[in-house]
Length: 241
Image (cartoon, rainbow, N blue to C red; front, side, top):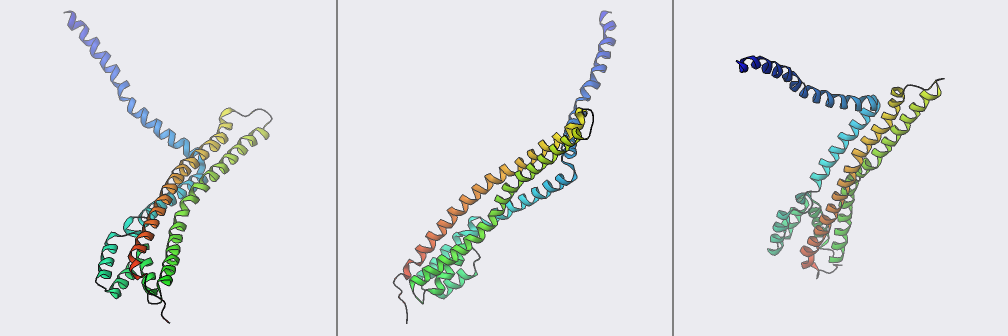
């Protein structure tokens, strides 16, 4: 009899607790939504567009440089093996055509050296150095745009900081009485959020640029060593006059 009296009360308590538990998930969604809405309202249309374009540009540069700095794009092992096989078989024309058709840095360096072997070994080495420097410069120029993102993103954030503070002080200047805190918070929010987004872009860009640059230097050094080793057999070639 006691259990039957308390059972409805227990069921009622459970029914009252259920809506509170179910409300936790929508509350979390509202928090996330309000956070994004806060960022968008703080940035405004102009800075939202600027940072969106900057972000897409940064991602595209990372993908493009990653593909350009693959080992197969700079120092392909298959090219080295086949080129060396042709040299061992004294099939120099085939070796030259193989290197010339390969778009990698190593392929272009070897092709430049082979094109000058008939003139002399020193001329071949000079041609390889010039081609290697030109190919390396092209890769470095492409990589430098990541450094540009790392440099310009904080500047955009700083511009937003100054812009936001000007808005906040303008509200103070045009009013006879102190403005409400929520009015001042708009300018302060723009100042802080633009700085935040600028740093969010700049820090990964600086890190990725440093890693890619060291990676490029390592691959270029390896390609130079390999090219020198493969062309050593022509060291006795003298100038033909």
